[in-house]
Image 1 (spheres, helix red, strand yellow):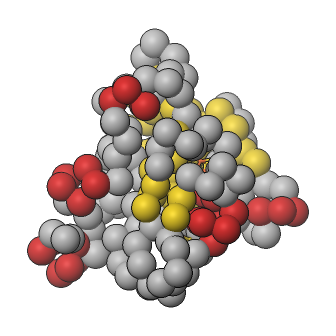
Image 2 (image 1 turned 180 degrees about the vertical axis):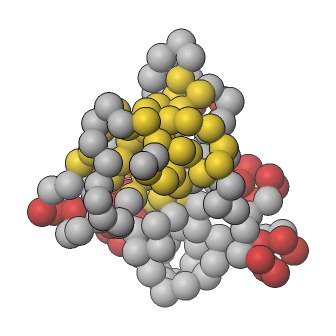
Length: 166
Ligand code: SF4
Ligand code: SF4
């Protein structure tokens, strides 16, 4: 059941986000997928692209994806396959002070590894500064590059986008 805030504004609240969140035990093991897909739509590339069979939509293509975080190895393949840009991979083990978040980024110019960018919350407000640690843009991703940011620990549930710093 999604929140009134999500119904009326399209923005997930803390309870919605929690439904997509893995256990603390799984987070401590390294990179893991976060699927913030809250609307029943006819779509399933997340399921068909995952080599680990960690995401299940099932026979009813309108069903919400269910994630078995214990099967996910954080490979990021599904992130660029999701047309809703609703999938992220978070690595809380990236360093002592930072977590890594991999997200789809369909804008130009692409950032470069080493750039400092402004990390944004869901509402578009600046959340914190972040460092670009990886940019992947292969043919298989079909024009949905993946950008990985290092963000301060504790901001994993907040950062969902970024903007370049001029
Ligand atoms: S990150 Fe990789 S293993 Fe995890 S759900 Fe996505 S495709 Fe599957
Ligand atoms: S591919 Fe993305 S939008 Fe489609 S069902 Fe999966 S998570 Fe939702």
